[in-house]
Image 1 (cartoon, rainbow, N blue to C red):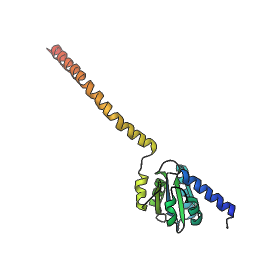
Image 2 (spheres, one colour):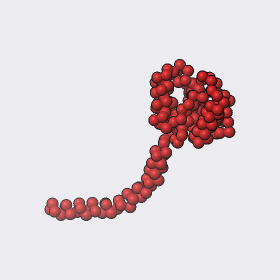
Image 3 (cartoon, rainbow, N blue to C red):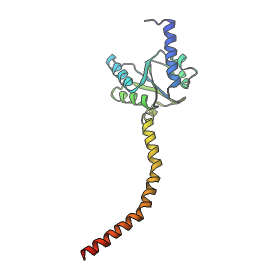
Length: 175
């Protein structure tokens, strides 16, 4: 089915709008995937809040121009699907990585993170990034550890004194 000029413009505008706000993008070759497999991939992407789209390379080039994913334009070749994380940088990488484990026909071609083009093997690093909530909890854990240690240190002499008094009391009662 041929696309009209208006439909092409709409696709370019939609992808450009998503690319402008997305922190990361992944391009993967999907040749050989069945319709059922693509449906499962789309469903898992939808559940994770990932924008997943198959776009012609010429339209993708136009959509990615003047965005932070401009670095992807030179390498667009073959049938590619694009996955854009909407909030978390590692969300799309997790979905694509988990799906590619079960389906060897989905091959990651390149990964982009905030305007930098990464190697396809870096999808593992990107997928293992903590989410926002995990990063905040890790930061709070690091920040509260010295305070907890200080509190334990300040309480230790008093606790030792109380234990000593209790031992003297027990010794007098036993005698």
